Amino acid sequence: MAGGIGSRFWPLSKDNYPKQFLDILGTGKSFIRSTFERFLPVVPAENFVVVTNKNYKQLVLEHLPELKENQVLCEPMRRNTAPCIAYANYHIKSHCPEASVVVTPADHLVTNEREFQHIIEMGFDFVEQPAHQESLLTIGIKPSRPETGYGYIEIEHGAWQGPKSEVVPMSSFKEKPDLETAKKFLAAGNFFWNSGIFVWSMEGISKAFASFLPDMVKLFNQGTEKFGTDEEQAFIDGIFPDCENISIDYGVMERSTNRFTIPADFGWSDIGTWGSLFTHAQKDADNNAVSGKVVTVDTHNTIVNVENGTQAIVQGLDNCLVAYRDKSLLVCRLEDEQQIKHWVEKL
Picture 1 (cartoon, rainbow, N blue to C red):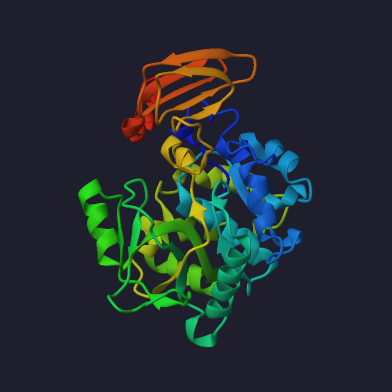
Picture 2: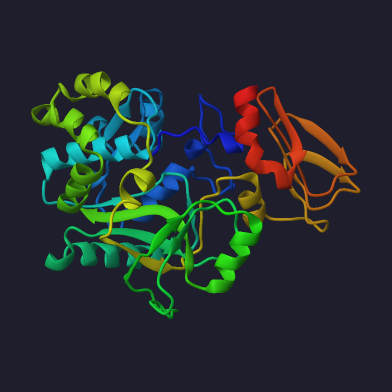
């Protein structure tokens, strides 16, 4: 899934060049490139499908030149993750109705790739068992702090003792909590971050959509014969505006009773906010994460990120964010970073 704009990373991530195509961590690779390479030992290049906004098709092909044009599916507009996944389902089903599918955002960080690949293969093995072909599996992340920026997955107390990863039944999803609730989740020991990575069989997810999002299925069923043909894009352009704007979590996962999770620890972060970037960035002696030609004076615990060709002097700040890119400037307290998306909408 590579269609978002990453507005919480404004002004680096903008509508014309969003986060998934950026090298925010300075690794020499964009997020989408890193994601592609992370999955290659598990999924051959010809089996990848990227769902993105129509405006980003060429960007996807530039970053992933191994893909053919028909592997990049273009949404005419943003309609959240459930329609995105439904589109991919119908496209994949037209080529391989018995597929096992892993769904992933294109813009996450994973530091232990070998363990990640092991977990994905474990997921495939699980959903390919006859008893679990209709099960829906998500990857949970063992929390390392009381994070308020992630949703949580709850399992029964004692269902998983760790540290070895295994598939366990899921009890419930929890929305992004406030700090006090996040502390309680962490102390309880049976809550995990929701990574947004899913594994299921085509049969299983198709039946779930039919049960929980029947109106969406009716729309897509009108063009069953058009998927995998030259008529696919025109059909999608026609029905997509009528699809409910709903996430896969709300639309399917929260309504299902046949859901499981693998509690895992492979160095995951969605790097969805400046704060999460700060966690993984290199710091100077004053605990500042600085990128660009910057001088800091009496400044601590602060991110300063300016584009090449720009000079900046930052004095007297603590726990703040200063970011400048393409004639756009952001200065705010790091503790208020969850508001950035709303501020950008105002702007």
